Length: 268
Image (cartoon, rainbow, N blue to C red):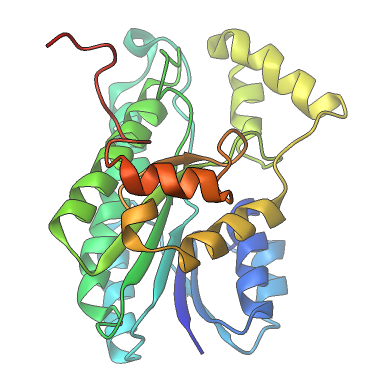
């Protein structure tokens, strides 16, 4: 059985993806910050181990890594489904301590966990790591600065880790609009979210097409089958990229700069 660690296994995306991995005969270790109905449902699976982990607490991170080591859980994959869009609002009107905490949750401590897990990877093959991207890659995502800058930093870290380690395949995917409880943060923010408040309300109230959890899992399985040169170090859009086409695979293999952070329209 292949082994995967899923951070945020009881969150909406993490919960659904975890179930799909379990149904595909993976052995899974998942984390949760707080007990909820999803943790109760997941405990019914025998090939799953759930471990409490508040990613903002270094002591819990160290404890989690120690448990993985003692279990001799040599993982093949890591999938991170942890994140928050808060604080929402004009940068200079937000509480900077909360802004900094958002960076730690969305970026710094995700890497802290990965850094600690690195020595427990399955060294006999190329291991696979997947992060989640967000808005702001190609525009100024107003009023979500902590969330946006964290995701941009994660995109660059994927490229850096890919370049540094030949046995790691690491990529980041932007899932598009997924119906999760994270949108409640925008609704709570109201006018502080700017135009995105109306956009989220319309998305949730109207029968608009959203990204299905199955499509996220399908992408993760596609990544698993591709070689490192094709996907690693890159940022994919689940809804806008033809990631399962032979044409795109050919282009990706030919262009090492494709789907990476680069200056646009440079002059020689």
